[in-house]
Image 1 (cartoon, helix red, strand yellow):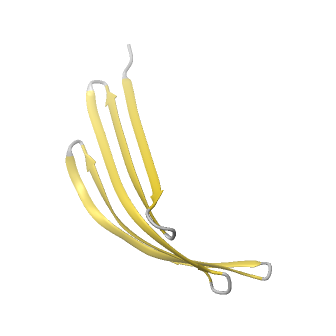
Image 2 (cartoon, helix red, strand yellow):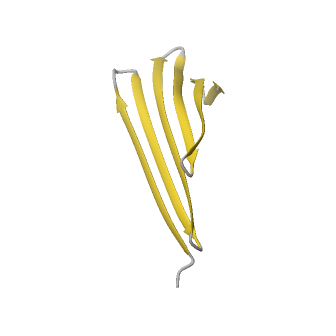
Image 3 (cartoon, rainbow, N blue to C red):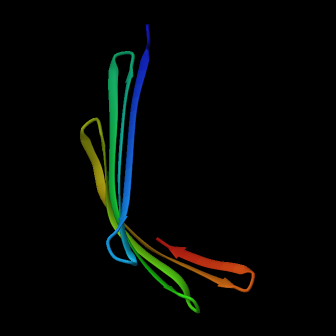
Amino acid sequence: RRSSDLLSFYNSDSFYILHNLSASFNFIRMQQQVYGVSVSSDHYSAIVNYRFQKPLLGSFLVYGGVNDQAADGVNQGAGLVAGANFRRNIKRWAVGASFG
């Protein structure tokens, strides 16, 4: 007799909208049953990225999106995400920074 079962599903999709503009979507579903008690969790997110790249300046990436999480059918809260990244090669050094 088994005392535990676990189902886990993950999906991630990304695509380019324009040359420097892309979007990604994620979905995660986990469901576990332990000694007859079922517990589940869902997570959704969508993020849009914009990349600006010039040879002398380096590359900048700005992103923003939303996420949501629910456990056992009860919404745990939605949120916003945003940030910016910078990267540039200076001689043999790769210099970068990020904020988010």
